[in-house]
Image 1 (cartoon, rainbow, N blue to C red):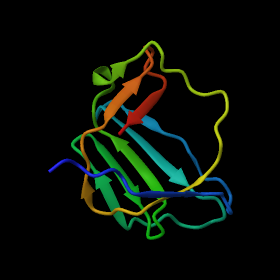
Image 2: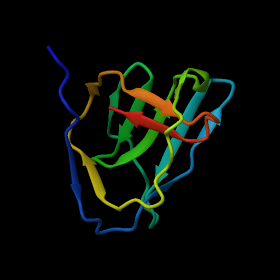
Image 3: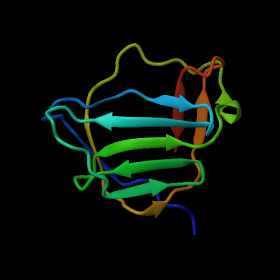
Image 4: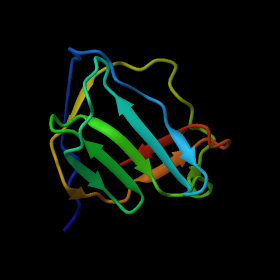
Length: 120
């Protein structure tokens, strides 16, 4: 059976935009990105979406709270044309699927391994 597309809802943001600062753990060859929602609200794990090398952790409201890429960055596919956008529109994203095994996404990066893109 072919994999289903991720089910998400995107709407106009009505709350403060979350932020995240990821770090690459050399000992584990993994990238971790915790996402913080301002206002003192504690991120509480509820569910996940995952594949062999990617884990997306989600709170009870369907908000993304943590990303883990366990594929070593030396194995990320380097692309000459991968350039971050100058600007990006904001949106409120909610995941509607939970506890699903995902098809393996492509993990892409620039040649310096400074920017990474997950392509589903």
